[in-house]
Image (cartoon, rainbow, N blue to C red; front, side):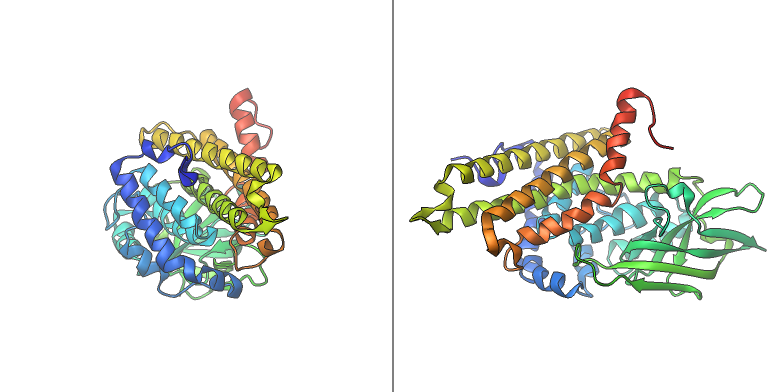
Length: 391
């Protein structure tokens, strides 16, 4: 019989190092995370020591070079995201925000002093970061952000708010994007490193979430936050800064979605072989086998997409439109798989005793964040036609 976990032997395409990282993260997820994740999800929390534990494994900023980062391939990073999200999307989000948003922004656009100050501690999980781009009225259209930065002597003063910021209440530093309007050379959108203990900075946890509960989401408020002149990310201006970071995070998401889909399929398969109705396992019925076949096709197709995009990224050839393709296709496939898996578990599928409803609920958020399904559809459309259907 074919390996249900990897029907097309897609992992044979991975390097020996990639597979070693897969095995390490999968074992950590199975032994250290999976036994507790339902409780974390139910109570809307994460353990305080999660950062150092992930840092000890080398998972934080693992695809970056130097400063205590592991310096792995992009494919290896993707495999790690896949195995983390097989446990829960919130855990992969924690790693994505830390490494592909906050750390990547500093690593790519920060000064030598900023890198030395933050990256080694962030790689170890001793300092956590968040990424402040989205606002209450500026989601898919970040150019309409209202957060402002103004000069006051040699200092910067930031005012505004950010919404749906993962890790916001537990972060030590926030990468905040703001519009500078002083009539000088600094006009435009700039990034700033804001220590979260700065006077005027407040992070408020967003409560009553029905999705991505094993993840901390916050609203950030900046009320005249004063920063030194060297707090700005000096190497980039405009939306190019945050959008390059988002592209990094989206890459991890398209891998992570494969893990969520695989976990749902595996549970549906296992349950269908054990659950008996009409005197036989429900796996023996034709309609059940059709669902299982459709799910395994979706999971393996998504896995192939992830591996190919990983190869392109490692070769320096991956384009933003291809990342949009991957996020659009793989998250959609994962959500469809989760919904189908839930039907196979019947009433049991809606409880936290099983994973499918938790994954399904999480994937509703994954479908929206880091670019909605609509925006990624239009990004692919623009690449095909050469015509942008949005500003």
